Every structure is written in structure tokens, then in C-alpha cells.
Image (cartoon, rainbow, N blue to C red):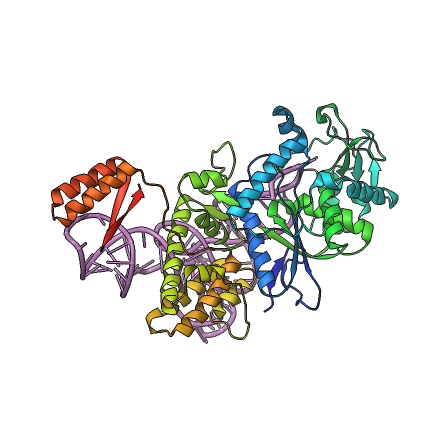
Length: 476
RNA sequence: GGCGCGGUAGCCAAGUGGUAAGGCCGGAGUCUGCAAAACUCCUAUACGCCGGUUCGAUUCCGGCCCGCGCCUCCA
């Protein structure tokens, strides 16, 4: 099945090339700057990319997925100094936490995860080529800048007016931009190599233009080409990266190679929180641990973050999370009903390998939607519709098994684990004892005693759930 | 100002030239000593506004209003 995906460069929905032979579908996504915990907005972007990664894999595209780690920039340097750590120790610590969060969110590992500081040479060499070809110059401050004017295609990704770029006369507020503090020939020019400054501390590398550090944009051009070649299939990131970051990546790469950098540009809209832009000052910037502390499951978060179309801003609220939890429970029930009919163990279901068969799909609506510009909300709608129409107890064991196999593939693409484990909290002995007493009182039909014990348990933060021949205890 | 995205029931969110998926919430019933769970069922005069094209527009075109994003290192 072929995937259609909108492309920012052509501003159209384009089919991804059909997989053939040994070709690997090369994907580069801009990863995090590791100076603190990633927030759920970052994860929205990475999760959408993860769904694309999984879809490509299941449909036979053989993706080769590269996502970088930015481990040198103003913020990482400043923070590491404040904490009295070396840049490396500082960024490694946050990289580890990022990895932990990714695993927790059930994200596939990238095939490569290059770090900027481990690829200084490749960046220096790319800058040298830009110098040699006349696309870069050393400013009066000693730093090296990209000469935007020299690259005729500059602005093509964002469809910018070249005339306006010459002066870049306005800023976000529409006011005049005071550009005279810069040593660039043109305000649109951007830094390739930043000459060492005192506040950079030890964080400097040798280069033909003196000790310094790379500009932000150059790492992605250099590393993408190193791992994926001069031209690759798809490049993605959050919308905010479309300009200037991706525009600059194109300028750096294409000026040197003369070839298209990426065939397809994939941008993911931002996450809003309670209708507002996320920001520290508004206090609405959540990390994964913030969400887990509020007793939501990580799967509910994953569901909530992928359930909106990537093309539109997603408004995240705690209502959304509640809705996601309930929706997951519904899927859990649907699957359990089929498991019973198929006499399949949970573990067997969870161990099923994704296996997509185009001709024999039992959920054609789901696949049609998800391959149509990664329409996850539409696909989820189709999935629920299909599950609602099933009557498990009328199915043969074979039919139920077949459905489960394809559902496993569907859930693999979404990266959702739908079988929800019963809470396995440790219940203190004293509480267990009280619960046992209550159960006995209930069996003896001493309901007054049973009720007062229930109240006592609740006052201590525990809830008893009765079933036919027993009970379970849950934290409130 | 430039470029872009969006306005669908209480909330979230698909989609279509012929009167509208799905999820959540809500409600009812069954069941259970109570509570919850579970099961079954159900609801809604929802397509920003104004014109145009059309037999017919939420869907196409034009205008307007409103919200949001980017426009020098934020996913």
C-alpha cells in the first residue's frame, strides 16, 4: 500500500515512492537539544514521527531512521556552566533521560542517533566546501557566515520573497529589526562557525577559522548527508523548524552538492495546552513525569498525543487525557473479547509480529486513512467503527484469531499497548487485613459492619471492588 | 506587513457536491446488600458570517469576521 503525505516544499500531498529492491527509505528528523527534560510538545512531534516510522516499516518501505541529538548550543553551554558540569557530562545526563522517556512512550529506536559534538569534523569540512564555493565568508568578528544572497534557491521551502529577505526589515511584531549589532553582510545570513568567546569556556574546537563551535543549522546538513547520502527521502521536524532551520539546511547542503537535499519535507504542528502556547511562564509546560505523577498512564499520553492530525495544532487538556484513557479501555475490552473467543493468551497476542497483507485486510478503512496523509484521527474512527460492529461471540476461533493478528499490526503502527494490566500496587498488610474482615462481614450478611469497614478503608486511601467470589483493593 | 494553519454537537475530532465517522462526557436499563465494575441501549434543530456557481454546498469560488503559528538557533 502506498503512503500519501503532504510535502511542505511543493505544498501538495505527494505519494512516497513505492518501496523497491534493496532501497532503504532514508528519514532524517531533527531531534532534541538536550538541556533539560523534553516536554509533551516535543514528544508530540517525535511520536508522530514514530508512527510514520512504524507505518513505513509495516508497509515494507525499509525505513532508515536518523534522529540527531543537539548537544552544543547556547543553552547547553550556559546550563552546564551554571551546574558546574562539563558540557559532555551535562548533555549525557539529559540524553539518558530523553532515552528513558522515549522507551517509556514505546518509541522505536532510530537507526542512528548522531550527536553534534561527535561530528565536528564533518561540519568543518562542509563549511570549508561552502567557503571554497563562495557561499560563505568570515565576518569582521571572525565567525563564518552563510551568504544567503549567493544561493539562488534560498527561501524555496518557505516560499519567501527574496527581495524582502535582503533587508529582513520586520520582526515578529512587525517592528523594525535593529541589525547593526551584527557583523554579517546581510541580516538574513546565518552563522556556520561561531568564533570562541569567553563565555563559551572550554567548549571550542579547532577549525581553519580559529577555535570555535559550529552554528546550529550545519550539524543537521552534515550528519544527514553522512548517514543518508547527499539526497534522501524524507526530512521532518516541528513546524517551527521550517524556517529558518530547514531552509538553512537546504542552503548548506544543496549549495555544495547541487542536488536536492530531501525529496519530501514533513512538518508537524505544535501542541497547545488548554488553548494556549506552552511556556514556562504560564506554568503549562508538562514533561512526561509531570503527567505520570498525575496518575495518567503513559499509553494514555501516547494516545492523546497521536490522536490529532499532525497537520493541525493539537490542544492538549486533561480532559483529552481522560478521554484517551477511556478510549484505551474500550480497545482493551474489544481485544479481550476476541482473545476469549480465540482462546489466545494475552502474552501470545502481545508477542504477535506485525504482518500486513494488503489484499486480505480486515480493517481496510483504517489502512486507507492512515496511509492518506497519516490521518490518525480518521484511522482511529474507522478502527472503533470496525470494532463496534464485531460480534465476538458469533465468531469462530479462526476468525477471531485472524482479527487479532491484524489488530496486533494496527496497534503496532500506532505504537499502542492496549492490554491494560491490573494495578499491581503493593497493598499494606494492615489494609489487606481490614479488607479481609470486611469480606467476611459481608459474607455473614453483617452489612453494617461491612460498610463501616469500607469507610475505614476509604479514609485510609483504599477502595474495595467486589466481584462474585472475591474482591480487589485499589488505591483511591 | 510577509508566509502558513484552522473555525463541525457540552468537549475532542474525521469526512463528503445530495442533509454528517469516531472518541469522551451525559442519560436509561440489567446486575450487584451498598459502592464500583461489567453488559445492553440511547440522546443531540453541530458544519463561523455573507454572497456566488449548482437541481442541490458543510463540502467548489469570492469577500468578511475570529483564533493560532512562523518570520535570527523553540518540536
